[in-house]
Image 1: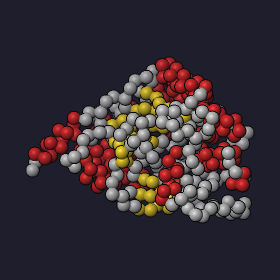
Image 2: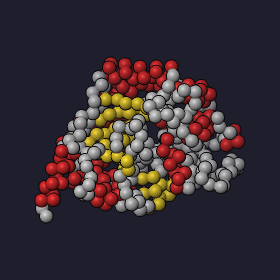
Image 3: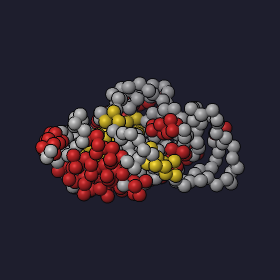
Image 4: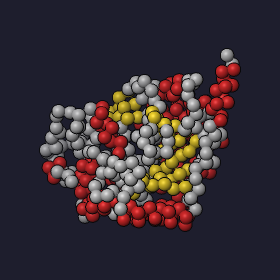
Length: 354
């Protein structure tokens, strides 16, 4: 549980994490004893980085994709529960407000992807855009790296998936529609809650739930296969919304619905507890206890095969509700298979030019 010395009554609006937790790789600790009238710097800082590769192999057996690519490190969406927060610690930052305010931008991402897909050794395999941080976070409006990556995928006729919480995905509907015609894209829209009070506090810089449902509708109307992800389900906070979200997802055109249970790894457990005690103090103890009960007794569960779906009576109850919701509203359809043959034939045609 959280050290009470880390908390204060001040709520930073527009940010999910309310504090910066210590970086376990640093010799220095963070002092949280600041005056109540201190102004918190909420400006986002962008740093250009130059990675040597953009495509990463996914080793987790809990994730269906073999490859992912993330154009940004850190995420301004500010989802307080985000499991990716702890990856910021490897860069020397905190998993807390640093994760939301210090964003690393991979401007050479499209060139790296073009080189990888043009390699003779590359075999067609779906690449997931996101998986760590959201590819359509607010920074994308300015840098347009995700759009460039989609253009590269279309150029090479290579399959790609998108995971996002942002209706900004509609900006690239022209490219996405062309990929869909070739059976080369899946879009996964994450909708955590229909309660705007909860959404604004818990994931403050994401699109509203209404805007995300509109994105589902417009993508589906354009022939794009869309899966709605209720990710994560937080017992006692949004777990009573399963059937209504399933209903609205189907009405918007989604073909399937998936979910994950909340798990609070590393510093995320401190950040989440600090947040919920400030934002929803009357619910805090109950929610924290239910989270632990749904993950085998601890708020953090690292076991493959368990951590995404949870363990115990509560987790099983939620699993049954999801199954019932899928059946009741017709969300049992599987995402259609990608056409992997187009990449091979397209590359062969390009090589023949030489």
